[in-house]
Amino acid sequence: MKIALFDTKSYDKSHFEEANKDFGFDIIYLEPALNERTAILARGADVVCPFVNCTVNKAVIDTLKAEGVKLIALRSAGYNNTDYRYALSQGIPVVRVPAYSPHAVAEHSFALLLALVRKLTHAYVRTREFNFSLSGLVGIDLFGKTMGIVGTGKIGRAAIDIAKGFGMKVLAYDPYPREIEGVEYTDLDTLLSASDVVSLYCPLTKDNKHLIGRKTLSDMKDSAYLINTSRGGLIDSEALLEALKERKIAGAALDVYEEEAGIFYTDQSDTGIEDDTLARLISMPNVIITSHQGYLTKEALMAISNTTLNNIKEFADGKELTNQVK
Ligand code: NAI
Image (cartoon, rainbow, N blue to C red; front, side, top):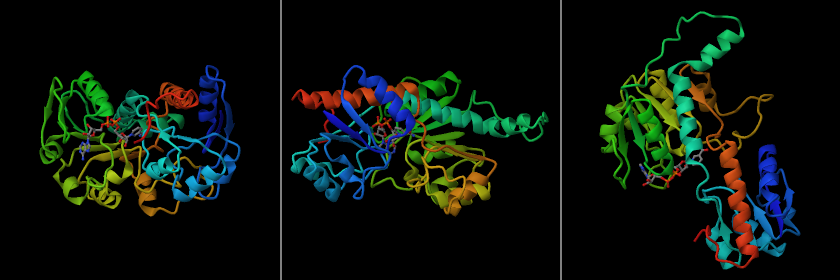
């Protein structure tokens, strides 16, 4: 099996090389993302392996088919960028990595939360300049505070365990509640008005775009912090900026941003960015932004590589595809 791995970063290559010791596939590492202009690069490959910012639409699938591609092996959980129904109609199944490490994302959300409430980014910059003053660095305890968890799937549940470890009270909202010890399910309004920290762990769907907007932000406590490691579109960024400027909430930490495509995962330090909302958010002292790196741990990258190559092996062996998108 010859595999064309699109949108390759150095950390993808090193983890796929490690995992491939057990599989022995022929992997071609390509830097460009897969799209209509780059699909031709798949020539000679049996399998293409796209990531989240690739576009796998009908035109791309037509080119892939013409070039002899037989399988699309997504190395992500999400498949909103792939017309999997059309691919299947053309005889090309699509497989994905349904879960890699919920702990990676849950732990990153707490890294962001702690950095935010203990002002670590400010402290770090100060001590690097030999400024050891503590003025303006007063934080809050997490112990005894109320954590509002929106979405209690795999990542949300990992976050609940961490919150309990900090001695926080946990409120949760999910359209499909589960029995979880020590967790009180409420409606979203109650969760927003009662929580000291609101953290999002639900998928972005056609029904919950801007779940956090002007109205929902005004329901939150003025002293509350908002954390988003899920999808940028869950938050109306303009409304968030306004709420922060008006001190309607105490701060925000975001690993995702609704207009992140084309910005995140790229180095724009030479040119700056054109997105004024993002630039203004980044400039605020009570905002921390990371570049969609919640999943970026060794464990998660190894799990992504192993599952992707195992998905391809199942296909090569003619077995049932465990992780096929149907
Ligand atoms: P999951 O499918 O295990 O759980 C999602 C939960 O959200 C489910 O319990 C579902 O009922 C609930 N839900 C759906 N709509 C909701 C709504 N409107 N309000 C509240 N809850 C709702 O998914 P998992 O693995 O926990 O991932 C959650 C999200 O995390 C993913 O959809 C993805 O957007 C994001 N993610 C972010 C990563 C990062 O690097 N920052 C990496 C991986 C996932």
